[in-house]
Image (cartoon, rainbow over all chains, first blue to last red; front, top):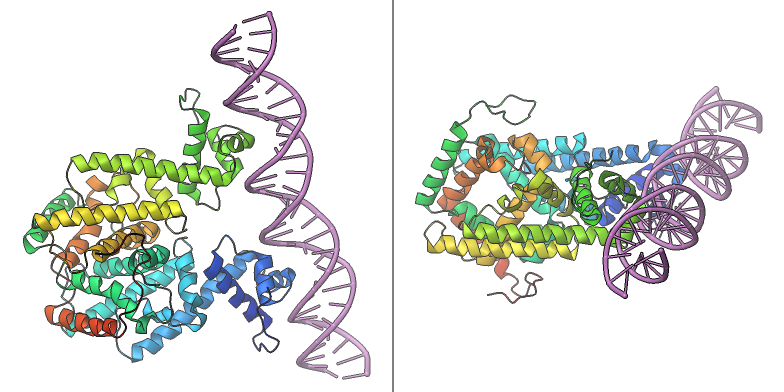
Length: 231
Length: 231
DNA sequence: GCGGTGACTGAACGCATGTTCAATATCCTA
DNA sequence: TAGGATATTGAACATGCGTTCAGTCACCGC
């Protein structure tokens, strides 16, 4: 199944890397073998190793490339104003492989993925802060935690996109989703819950009081295992 | 690394099944091989196949067993009143393997997992309906979707528990979490967002109006690919 | 005690994997 | 144009995989 045209001006190395990303996106990490990648890229298995040293090397190169593409998209997106939808950054990428690639690597804990996610949380926190200033978002007692939770929810939904598709009827990895009416099936309950609230005022007060009491019962508990200090 | 004591009164078949669940929970699906499971259970690789037919058969048996344990827990939990925390049902299970097992299988789309998740959404929907009746939860225009989204968020966070641990400082697979002060680091921003709301009233109205307009631009779009009809 | 049935094992099979290596083709530089 | 580096290949390697199979062991009804 060679999927390269005769006039492909990418270098073989780039073709191999892209083939690997596509393969992971379509079949997952475990099913991405040297021979499948080589076949998709239209080269021999030996060349894959020649260019990337090992299968691990290829994996790292893919992660690096994806992180770079996302970084590019983010700086571009920054110009068009803040956006709460952390997923939008890579949904509309060529071929749509990026979202599905991420969905697959999100669940294994490589340092590269951790760095990628931490960066997304940083962005979310900054966007939220802007939203608070401009009166769109309510201020919070838990700035960093709120951004983290929001990012985890969004990325978690991406990781479970197969189930989201079955339950809500929309494909979170679809590059055209941003402009699709199907997006409403996700965002309308999203806005309802995060706008008007899920719990009633009285219940919220009770829940927070109960939780605060539990939290106060042990203040020496360790916080997030983050490099930076917490504000 | 045989991890069975001399006086283990479980049948060999049960020991193999439990060993497989532990192995998946600790090392993931791809790294769970016949030989590793056999070694953990203290039997020969051939016996694993003898009892379960194949590796796929073992996998199905594990899924079935996990589903059964969760069902048991749910019926017991039902007696002590409704609980919004869908994760609590299996967090406090022997050894804590269940949560980590689920975290690993959540992302591959077997029918068994889909059924499990659909069942959780059903429960969440029922619990939420009870909450609405008793005045704890606000009524919604999107009953089923709201329950689905809530379940996806919770389960997505479980799937990304490694990142949740790094970002929020709590282990969602920890069996003792329900009684731990660390839980507050997840639930306090949770209650804040889902209680008071994330967006301001004005912003919410704008967001929903914009999204509704987009949704109305194509009403023939397919809904969730669900068996049951939608209400 | 005997025969049969199921639990259990060790050794082997065929296959797919990641990787190595010598050999060839292609390109760039001098 | 000669020559050295780089790109690329096919064939082979060792390893680990799931699975098979003949054979041993223990139990249980007759």
